[in-house]
Image 1: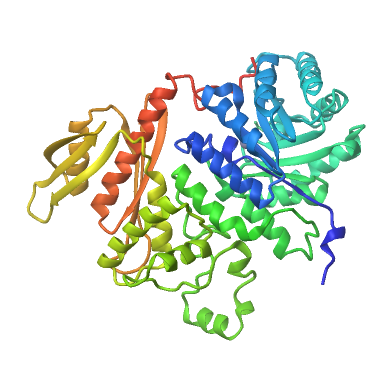
Image 2 (image 1 turned 30 degrees about the horizontal axis):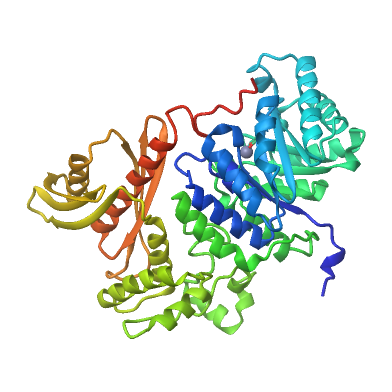
Amino acid sequence: MTDKSTQPRVLIFDTTLRDGEQSPGATMTHEEKLEIAGLLDDMGVDIIEAGFPIASEGDFAAVSEIAKRARNSTICGLARANYKDIDRCWEAVKHARSPRIHTFIGTSPLHRAIPNLDMDQMAERIHDTVTHARNLCDNVQWSPMDATRTEADYLCRVVEIAIKAGATTINIPDTVGYTYPFESAKIIRMLLERVPGADTITFATHCHNDLGMATANALAAVEAGARQIECTINGLGERAGNTALEEVVMAMKVRNDILPYRTGIDTTKIMNLSRRVSTVSGFPVQFNKAIVGKNAFLHESGIHQDGVLKNVETFEIMRPEDIGLTQKNIAMGKHSGRAALRAKLKELGYDLADNQLNDVFVRFKALADRKKEVYDDDILALVADEQTNDAHDILVLKKLRVICGTEGPQEADMVLSIDGVDHHIDATGDGPVDAAFNCIKMLFPHKARLQVYQVAAVTEGTDAQATVSVRLEEDGRIVTGQSADTDTIVASVKAYVNALNRLIVRRQKSAPGDDVKQVNYRDAG
Ligand code: KIV
Ligand code: ZN
């Protein structure tokens, strides 16, 4: 048995709430951000990048509150290379038991051209801003954005300046996911060899997944000497996303023979976090996603099933329990009581308050009446759906009937409550979903455009629940809504209504151009 306590410790820096949330449509509410931060803190994440405080009042409030509540993790905020950003960031993170300021500027030729700074002017800006941050906070992280496309000599020069100005962590971002693992390692090795003072700070690796190499690049950087990995749950993030936390952590655990590093992560909490992030961000996890995908531990072929039954190690390199995936998929039915549901929810990682449990129980009973067997995935979909409802929702679906079939036109008849008042309408459409969405548009006119409409079955069988994801865009604001129901059309309408409720909150909280998605933080002006 390996003694892991002597292995080098790799810090896990989670940026789900900052880089992950920047993914179009992944915007989370204030309460959702606090919940996710609490789960990350409990899971043993070393540093939580909680947001970009200058981007909006909402981001500032979330980072401040997360900083106040964190029990174990260091709380970090992002700031561009200017004093105003850095001051605002400090105002938000200073409440933390352990605060960190993360400031950055694009150093590659392409990025230097944006603020129109030459190499010397940029070097001076880096010196001044890192010094300013360090005067406020003992824990300062500096990132040369697009580091992997920055000239080697210039990268060494600016890293040295940042270290001399007081940066305690130097992060090397592969901003556009361009690097190959060999290069990722080479850059870290070069910096460790060439930069004076490199041995006094921690190097971090921050990879994007545009070429599907984020995990490999992060691990290659660790082998070369990086001791902090920046990542997100489910690999959430702009474009193809960031390094997935669950992948790097489990790779170091499962292949500890060749990756002899330890982290402080309680891996049994991974699955619950993955589900919550998927629900609140509105980004479903692809079925064949490594570690947390629905099929990651599913053995379909006869040969595999036979092998796994005889000896699980024939086809499984890790145990489902290692990531908190319960193997006891006991079917629950209409005779199961409240206590059984509570026990099942606990087993699935949910400790609901009594009032929440009551609501879920009512829905569970209704589901059990409609469905022969209720599986873990059904219950998880139900809890997730319950958690998308908010007592403050302006729009609530009260009633829906649709007529569909081979003879058109398809028709929907709906009662929608708007601000507490019930409104009734019927409409036709090109199919039942279109007819139902037309009812919503007539009762609550809006100019949001439907960008994504996605349906997935939760379990097998024609009585399975459907989960529906809807993404809307209005004036650059992108929101996602989700819902689950055994009736696909009902789930679709509830997901649309959920997205609209989120849009209403976004409209109230920010004028167009005033929120995190709108701020071009890459402009270091
Ligand atoms: O990808 C990137 O370069 C970033 C920086 C802000 C660190 O997210
Ligand atoms: Zn990034």
